[in-house]
Length: 273
Image (cartoon, rainbow, N blue to C red; front, side, top):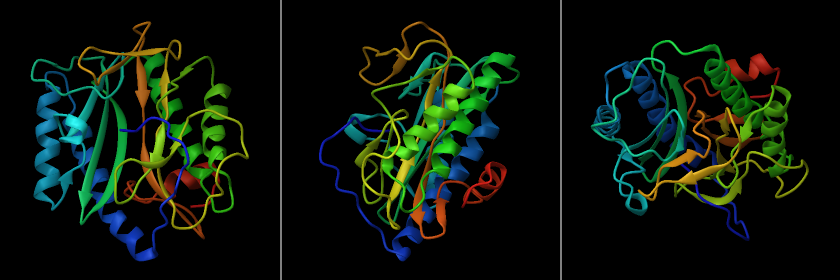
C-alpha cells in the first residue's frame, strides 16, 4: 500500500537498533505472505485470505497496519486480475483457476512497520500473465539493487522503469508508487516506478523505503472504483504488483521483508546486498 506524491520530503534515519526492530516487523509480513501464498487456490475467497492474514499477524505479536488506515476495512489488499491495488477483501470474491491476485500486507511490531506485496497465480495461468509476474517481480529487485548508499532516490525509479521497458510493451502505473517507512507506514518520500536517474535525495545508511512496481499488460491508465479504494486498469487487462521494504546500509540494501534479506535475488542479479 502506498501514498500519493507530497512535497518537501523529510526522510527518517534509523539507527542500526531501529532497523533490527523493523526487521522483526518485516519478517512477520514476509512470513504472513508465504502463508497466504500457500492458501491461494480456486474456491477460496479474498475474505478468507484476509482472515488468515489477520490471525497470523495477531497471533505472532503484530498489529495489521492496513486495518482502519484512513478507514480501510481489512488486513490485506486483495486485488484480482484487472484490479491493480487496494482491492477490498470480500466474502463474495471467489478465486477461480487462471486468476492472478495481488496480496499487499503490512504489520506493526513494537511501533515499527513492514510492508510488502506479492502477486500469485491461482492454479495454472497462461504464459502471458506468467511473464507479467516475472517481469514485475524482477523489476522490483532491480529497483532494490539500486538502493545503495550514495545513489540518488530516482536511481531506484529508473532501474525499475529501464528493466520493464527492456522486456516489452507493458503499462507502468503512474500516480502510485513506493514510499518511506518506519514509525509510520507511509512517510516521505514517494518513489515513482519511472523517471530519470541522478535526481532527488542522496541515499544514506539508515533510510528505509518500500519499493513497489505495478505493471499492466495493457496501458498504464487506471481508475478508482466507487468504493473509494480499488484501482483498476481502464482497459480491463490484468495487472501485477510486488513490493518489499528495505534499509539502506553501508554494505548494500537489506531487504527487511524478504525471508533471506534478498541474498538469493541479489546474487542472481550480481548486485550488492
